[in-house]
Image (tube, rainbow, N blue to C red; front, side, top):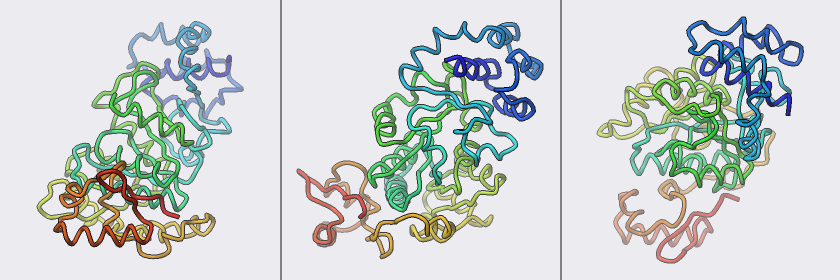
Length: 356
């Protein structure tokens, strides 16, 4: 408990300046340094400096706040801890403390980040679900931000594989945002994934916190997939962070009539990897992919129609709208997919089956 209270005290004292805390921990490892010494590194711009120093002097005063969060399963990792993700630790602006709810070891798995618009098109969500499902089946953990739109579809696709997915939050432990993804967050944890935050408990989401957390999404990952993005968007911030961190950036091309394709097209013009099929990602990480047992379905072409299946039951009308196929053509294609074992009929619609 004492170690956890010390890490929570650091997280609260430096919040939201977790990068400055990371610099302080590189100079003075937490297990070799009295907490009060870190007060010297507190940025002067932070409000309530006396309260912040008090937390460092008496971390036990935070026990009433720590106890209910610990009961939920939250755990705090400091830069330098054995379980701290190594890819993140290598970054100069690594956060000093991470709060984790779920399987801590998931943070050290090879990850691919998937980001995109909250107000994504049906095709964008279908693409996120499809590629996430395939990448999770290939052995990658899929990392995203638990937002509506592309993020939610990416998490659900990974869960459907079934695979591991991580959600990096733009707020501190406590109230979950957005509230409608509370059930999805529970499914992520139950499947062996995790929720991750660099912010102190109670820190609400803000316009500043999301761009700050985007560097974590890319920093935890080997590469970033941008599914749909406007020219001014958080997804392009994540892609820029990825490029600065030396990560691979992938973008999915889209219709010239879709404003949410413009961000992806900009990335492609600037040299991002073209993403049209799962093999485009697997080829970029061939050394990793050789070490995992991937699904046989990934070694042969995956039917394009599967990208229009989004978690749960998909009705014929929904699939017609997403795919643009006429009902007779779509029905014939669905019969073929069902015969090959890619989908199954459930109630008044169809669900896709995990690869394998």
